Length: 323
Ligand code: NAP
Ligand code: GLV
Image (cartoon, rainbow, N blue to C red):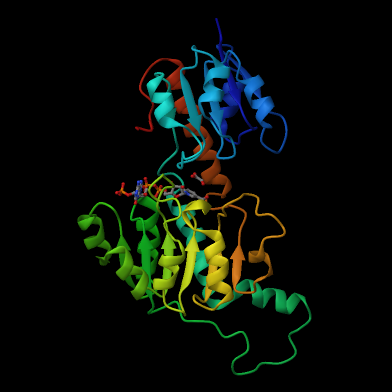
């Protein structure tokens, strides 16, 4: 009998194309651009052996209950799995897969796009030109801060944090990192110095957030953390929105307690149009495009399909998430 699978969105890549033509797998694909509404997700998972999901799908005990006891594998097309109750999956013997590594460099590129955009006011300057405001050259017009030679603080020295730090070498930056576990070898290679959380915040000109979202890191960058940063500092978040207390961030930006922010992720996604962040010239918000090069997205989808297939076969996943 064919394995039944629900995929919460059409995916790019060859792995997905081959899945669709595989007689051994009966694939149901959510046909719309947006995520399946909760009721549709609960309905479509009924009786499946495998689920391929995106960061936009919350996979909790209710989804697992709706699927039924035959569910073997939940395969995420993402490295971050904060949307999945991994412990609940483990307690039911359901394997969880993710897609680390292939998106590391692409996501670090976006962190750097935000460092440069926020530091050198790139978006504001482009809007200035398009808005017909460019009438002359003047000494302090759209002057930002230097990125080269500045101090970069990396919060979370995992794969992406290290890739962000590696790029800083080309800009002659001093790199500091905070990580719950020491990463002495990697740090040594990158010339990065370990700091306590508070010292990193106090010393950095740019703070790049690269930790996973967990119960421990939710709200890590709160009012108290923001108050330790330099008033000239720039916060960049390409990890997950809820790691930053967004109300506290708005407050800190309004009061000039930090200088600017570059965000690829926000507490609520999509960011509501009424968010004060959208009215601030010193804030650049991107729609969670960290891994969004076509090549990387194809590799992620291929990995997600490989994890799915391994899970359906009852074997170990090429990339399994452990509790
Ligand atoms: P990774 O290599 O697994 O690194 C995870 C980092 O989070 C490590 O520094 C790890 O510290 C830290 N961490 C995990 N649990 C923690 C906890 N409870 N307390 C403190 N620190 C903790 O993952 P990655 O590939 O670099 O990705 C990092 C995150 O970036 C992902 O989880 C995801 O949310 C986000 N991301 C966003 C995009 C985007 O499109 N914007 C794309 C890819 C990833 P240890 O070294 O001590 O384990
Ligand atoms: C994207 O945000 C990911 O976690 O892969």
